[in-house]
Length: 486
Image (cartoon, rainbow, N blue to C red; front, side):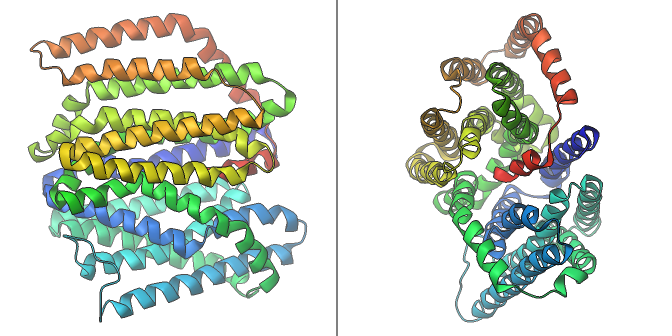
């Protein structure tokens, strides 16, 4: 595997990740113009339903496919049996679960959410989850083979179909919330059919019981981690809907999209960081790792600070007046993901050291439990801000647990005091956005300019150094394979 191809694929994956996660954000002006706060709330509830169903539909077998491919890479027939087994099992499982959910809802509700009817919204969500689970397996297969261009083309086609159908149904036919749900279902169905066509040779191999057993043995333990991660990021919407109303979910969803920018950035950075991290640990080059992790914390905190200080103005420009209150959660959601970036750094050591991966579910489950408890306590009193604070605190706790376990792994000791101090300092400054001051906008501009100048002169050489490192470093295929851990 050439350095050029690895670097090229890293750019593609990072760009595609940003494109996928930024879709809803880019369409916010259109969404908020054509949807009410309640309508946006329905969107904020339906999309998480799709994602949690997909967890059960796939059984995390996409991770197993990537793991076991390298054991059979020298035998094309075994590769065919492996992915044929995974594809067929996911298709059969997804079809069975979808059929049972739809069938039983004729008699008594299995999925019941306040303000969201099963037909057509949850019905389409069930179908979408089935289609997307099969497509997800194929995309993971392409990543395993380092087919970055094909991966990028598929995702771009999905993006175009989703955007086009959404705009036509929402703007021209004015179908409201149904436009978004139909668009997502249509895009996933189109790629589902394409996946079946491209993998018809794999499907001909049938199911290998031996390969299925080994794949499930590997993937099933990952399900609690996936569910816990879902709870920590999505449960607040359902609790807001249950304890307040669907309209509050809509406002929260809009504000969340702005704070989620930090998640998009940190996730993209993590894709490049993980293989580089493993490579440098093997070489014993811990100094660069420590310096780079601190630099990333500063950069992301700086971006989050700007986003938080000018969040009110950004929300005011991009959304209709009914959604403007959503700016208040941006500092809390944004810095929640800054702390989650620390989790990325600390937990990487657990994935590096054999036998420590079993600790990951403990971290995610702990974060999920804390998140739910805090939401139950804070939402009744502080509403959407309470939900955002719950996310912030739960991510802080998650990062601390990851830090404790990371230190016990004895792989590398991060300068955690400095990293936490940086984030806390920037977060404290971001709270200036809540001050009621006539010339507040001028004060915020001055603060950002001062911080920008200081960071530029103090960290310019480090930024240039690590930018050069990522362009020159050689990362082999086995190290790249470890990027599926998050």
